Image: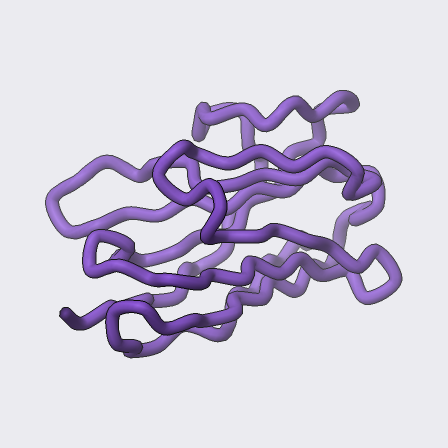
Length: 126
């Protein structure tokens, strides 16, 4: 049974930082491309960042480039999303996702991901 468990969300002031973690189990983690999505109230779930199986390639949506950094530790079956210079528009539920695809290229499509976590709330106050 595959499980993705996010943690690290919370309330932060604009300009602050948070570090989200996603711990995976039940899958071959080192063989899985990983992504982070977010969903704000009344909006569609959108791609935020992704990382290849080895961690060599990372992908970001334009709105977070230069502020968010995605990394992974295959020895710990975990990915980490470091979020700096947070803005109120970053407020959303953040979801970790994994894909079984052999080659990961940072797909923005939700349908390309096979497993999802339950989400963690990030709230940025102005």
